[in-house]
Image (cartoon, rainbow, N blue to C red; front, side, top):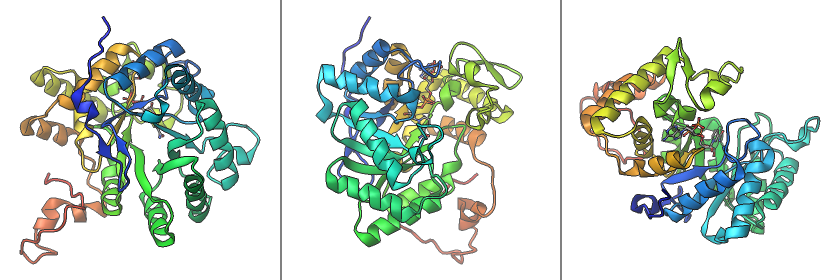
Length: 371
Ligand SMILES: NC(=O)c1ccc[n+]([C@@H]2O[C@H](COP(=O)([O-])OP(=O)(O)OC[C@H]3O[C@@H](n4cnc5c(N)ncnc54)[C@H](OP(=O)(O)O)[C@@H]3O)[C@@H](O)[C@H]2O)c1
């Protein structure tokens, strides 16, 4: 049965950072558009997933020039060329990943690559502008002035509407945003970072930086590549079952290998219990948790099947009561490490800085709850 209904909560748009761009609270991730990496969906399924997402009220699609060797962008481009509606969609894509082995300027964040990458993306996406252009990852070498100056020029030329940074150190974002403010350049509207119940490290630096400097967080892999769907059984710390994880584990990619730990399986167990109590799926509860974290404007979801998409789109309606949220908090809380323990609530309220007085500050600062 195909569902056609609009989902009201998906069509309650959020402003992205301190910009005028309106995006749905769930963004459709297109890294799984195309079969080239062995765990994506073929073009016809991807088109049905995209059609259903848009029809339900979503307007925000995330891809990258490097996804499935460019197929992801081409699949999106073909969709809008056939179905129309491109101007109503917020299409986001990214540069950084090297797409021409042996050529140092066919990757990274230098001006030559940014302009080369954008022309390729526009061609594959069959459009003459990108709504949100992401730096995919910090390359550790290009001067930040060159990156921000180039992105600002692209906005002025009309090829790009808004800009964002993905997978960067928080200090780098702070430097980029301060520079943009000082020079009158286009500001960073959002940060795209991994964020889920099993990956909460951005709470230390990135979320406070985003809140203080007026950018939104758009979390990626909110289900930890499917681990938090609860569909896998464990063999040691490895995942067993149908889906992406068994095909990628053991492949040496540190981004995936870090998933398979005792701690993360304990989080999955707690999530399953909470989901049972709420009569929802673990995936819906995990998504509901991410979407309501401080600074999060839009969560980038992934789905390789229509049923997954349909279930995930309804996650916005899930409310996690305090007692159950506390259970998830207890099991997933990041380790207390220096110097961040100084900024935690119990340390703060201990009177070391306030002399025992109560000081109300503007809520631009994200302070972890008491342990
Ligand atoms: N900036 C970056 O560096 C970066 C990195 C990664 C991703 N991203 C972005 O984030 C998007 C989402 O990432 P992701 O795909 O890793 O997200 P995810 O939500 O963590 O994982 C999605 C996968 O989980 C499984 N799944 C989803 N819903 C399910 C459900 N209801 N029941 C059971 N299984 C379910 C599916 O995998 P199976 O096929 O295994 O069933 C699906 O492809 C990407 O498309 C991309 O746009 C960005």
